[in-house]
Image (tube, rainbow, N blue to C red; front, side):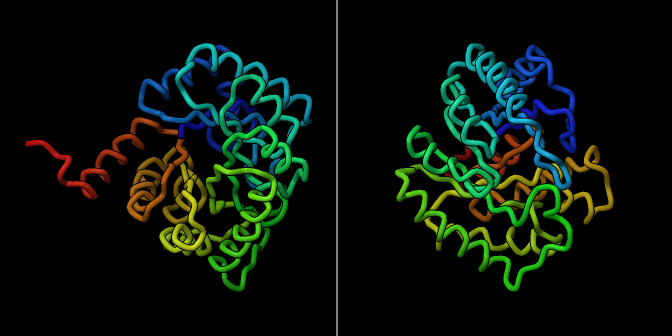
Length: 264
């Protein structure tokens, strides 16, 4: 999953793709490099950020999703939003999936709207509001609490008629460094208990930069290492800024896991 941030304040690439032509060009480049899904977000969710006004998010999504859909008709488009109104508009413009960082908690219309639309739904765990979630997050058992949260959410999703669900443990969203690595180690258990595919989004995040004492611009090597671990642990999708490197990771992991596919 290639990230297309049409925002001014995203932590890594904010402001680079606000122009529709620039956004489409970057989308085309990511697909050319091997992206299977494009995840378009018009409101930053980095720790400490404030969501953009709803009308601005709607305008950005309407313009870019429409343009990307026209240019790349065979590519799956995901829209990263917590707002039901934006989800509805995105699907009407040609989006195929909804990626919600709040799993319906920040807009209680989201779950029924996604059920009505019949689209696949990516639901993420986030503890607290975006503005304050990284201020001393605490858990008794982070893996157990995330697992219980999703067990309850899956009941709500099924009740609303949402059949196709992918779960995201929410690395960096209301978690300390140790919480993040506990969840990384727990990917196999989460998948076994919850019975859903998992998306892992760790690209250039603080669980890498803080550990290695580097800036996001210097975090590609750490991202590649951690994406390798995520795939080996069973993650189904990795959400990345750097598609070429992620495609190489996928090929190497596939070769390790399925040596019979190798040719001399």
